[in-house]
Length: 372
Image 1 (tube, one colour):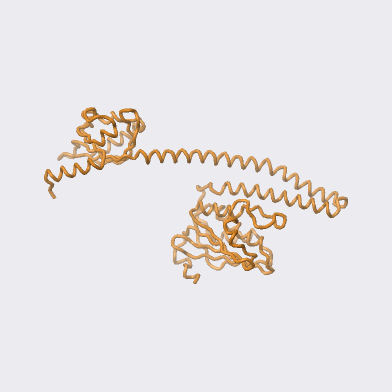
Image 2 (spheres, one colour):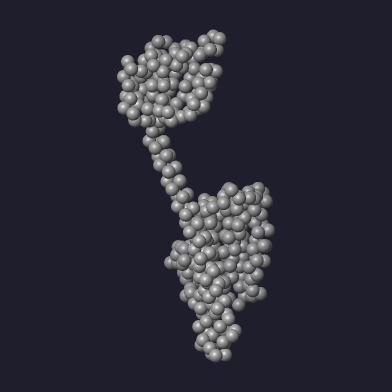
C-alpha cells in the first residue's frame, strides 16, 4: 500500500503527539527533534540539531550497555531498552526507547529514528521499592540474628532451671511434700512451655526463608512420616482418605504445615475415640486439602484469632500450648500465595481447609466433584 504525502504527514503528526521523537544521521548527529524531545531535555531545537546524544548522556549506563546499543542498530537491527538521560538543567529522566535504523539498498543504515516514552515515575517507584526491599532484608537479617542470640542465651539457663527442678524433686521430694513437688512440677512445665515458645518463634522467623531449597515433595510419603513422628495415642485414629499430590516446596515447610495441624488435632482431642480424616481434591492449578477431626470444635468468633501469633483458646496451665503453630502454618501458606480457613461446630469437630500448588497431573487426582 502506497502512502501519499498528506498521509505521511498525518502519521508524523500522530507520532509527534504521542512520543518523544528524534532522527539522527548515520553518524548519530541529530537531524530532527520534536517538541516533546525539546520539552523533556530542556534544550531548544537549535541546541539539539547537529549534536549527538552524548549531549543528554547521564553517565548512568555502562560503556558496554551503550556499545551494545550501537552495535545493534549499526547492524541494521532494532534496539529496544531503557535509558536514563540528563536534561539541560541537570535533572535526570528515564525513557523507554525503540531505535529503528533506516537502511539503503545495500542494507547499510542511513539514519536512525528514536521513539521514546517517558517512564521516570515508574523507574523512581522501582528504585524506591528496591531500596525498601534492601532495608527489609537488612532488618530481617538483624531480627534473625537477634532471634538466634536470644534462643541461645535463653535456652541455656532454661535447661539449667529444668534440670534443677528435677534434681530437687528426686533428692528432696520426701522433704518437700506433695505441695512442694506440685509447685516444682508446675515450674518445670512452664520452663518447657517457654522453651517451646522460643523454638516456635525461631521457626516462625525462618518461615519466609530458604526458597532456594524448594524441591518436589511427595505428600503421600511426607504424611506417613509425619504421622509416625507424632505417634498419636491408641485412642486416636488418623485416616488418609485420598491420594495426595506432589508439590514444589521446601520439605521442612511442607512438614511444618501438616505437623502443626495434626499435632493440634491430637493435642486438643477430647473424645475417647478420636477420628482425624485427611483428604485432597484438585481445584484448577491448586489442590484443596482438608484435615477434619471430631474434637471439641471452635466457636466461629475465634476463627481469625487462632491464626494470630501467641493466641491459644485454652488456659496455659490447663493444656500446654505456645500459640505459635497455626500462625506458622498461615505464614508459610501465604508466602506460597495459598490460603487457609477453618469450619467448626463446637462439640462436634473442626475442619481446616487450605490450598497447595499441585504438580501431580489432573488425571491422577480426585477433582472437586469427588466431594459431592
